[in-house]
Image (cartoon, rainbow, N blue to C red):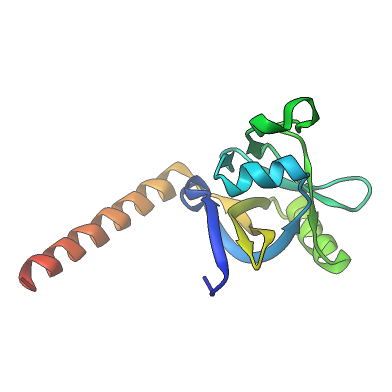
Length: 154
């Protein structure tokens, strides 16, 4: 990532469960107490996904943001749907692809860029079980190669 970027949460499970074909940076609409919780790292992208609603807006569903304790009764709903800020042409393009071709839009990373909350989303196709096994095999092989390389460079 570039300078001025503070990564808050990565969705590691999405990298394993899906083949990511394209990524896009989107702004995310957060309430004040949500911003405080996100800055403190009290957020989870596990099980979250994005979808275009009937009004033509893309929203993220299932993202958990822990309620900020000091907000009291003026806090936020932890799993509410949050609007993503994208151009209409991007929303239409990604929404059509997800609807017609069997793709899913998954959040990959939540971060702050120059003080603004950003969400990296990816258009992805689900992996079959044998593809997941192959990914595990490749990852283990890569680790083994790195370990061997380090041992010989002592």
